[in-house]
Amino acid sequence: AQKVTQAQTEISVVEKEDVTLDCVYETRDTTYYLFWYKQPPSGELVFLIRRNSFDEQNEISGRYSWNFQKSTSSFNFTITASQVVDSAVYFCALPANQAGTALIFGKGTTLSVSS
Amino acid sequence: NAGVMQNPRHLVRRRGQEARLRCSPMKGHSHVYWYRQLPEEGLKFMVYLQKENIIDESGMPKERFSAEFPKEGPSILRIQQVVRGDSAAYFCASSPAPGTRFGETQYFGPGTRLLVL
Image 1 (spheres, one colour):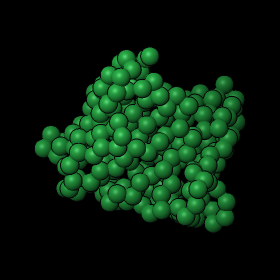
Image 2 (cartoon, chains in turn yellow, cyan):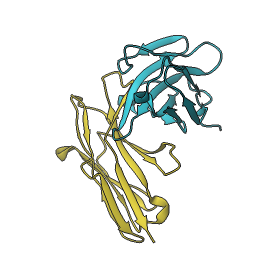
Image 3 (cartoon, chains in turn orange, red):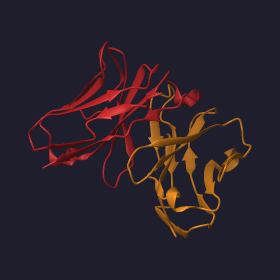
Image 4 (cartoon, helix red, strand yellow):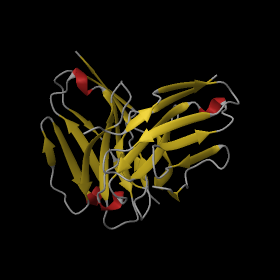
């Protein structure tokens, strides 16, 4: 069965600290994509990244980086030099079925960055 | 490019009333998905629609909830005879094609916050 676990419910850091958000998944598929979304306090859901299970190279986008390790079924997200604007709930997601018509989300990690 | 549009952003209903939530997908997207975010729970898939067709409603409650995506106009999620437990954020997403398993990304709207008094 498809499952996404974000064990960290809440994380609090001070500005400029680095922070890593963990995501562990279970899937029956041999090829798949994984996704990260951000939900800032304003409430909308913002797509951040998708990653193919074939590609285990780290992805970096500015202060954001993602580490995908198929061997440990993890897709972790690191924010370097965090800023107050990074405060949000972050969700990791996986296709829920073979057709990929739905996503299954983790329960999210609430990141609070204080100045 | 306009993103996914949802309205209203906030909706207050009394128990027993009907709630109608609207979603206009991104331009060029013909696949619409509805999700519900209940307090203390994550986002849960409800239904997936293409124009004039419900493709996957495996996450829809069996009673009082329905969805449509007509040939013209927005997708509608309808909740009849609302109860307090329906209070939640309802998100619509769209994509140009289905298949998140193959990399199709679902882009979300801002959500509709439904409060049932």
